[in-house]
Length: 161
Image (cartoon, rainbow, N blue to C red; front, side, top):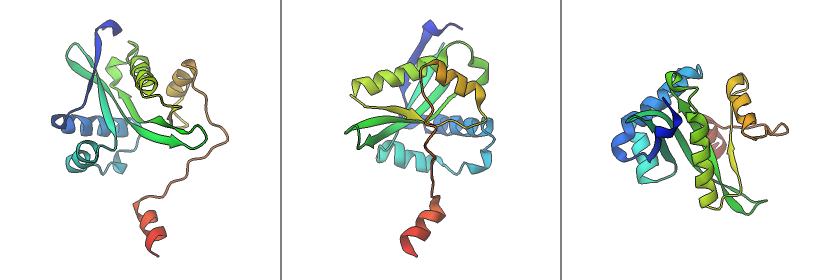
């Protein structure tokens, strides 16, 4: 398959089962299947009712071959919104055709159209193929930063205890 037949489309509410399948397939690839607690109901609420995040699909020959889920963050230093890529996934059988680069290019175009000051994402430390790919695009690792996270239990503990 050539990259020149690739199109993008925004996810619509009827795509919720497909979005959830991509999430589960990504989690399996990242060896994190047990961490997926997302449901179709949650995705409907947060993606389509609250509109907290957006999903685009990469479509080749009428088949969704990849997806990206992203949302806006904000940089106080830059004084503008940024685009944050939460997840990107290309099915393994469709890798090597330039679809990953095309998705990131599409997201960069969205960020540019929206006048975003940054386009950021995280990558697992063990995922050398992705790290090499991102660096080939000119992305730079943020070596002096560590991500900190409170999970749902940690949020409740901090908020209410």
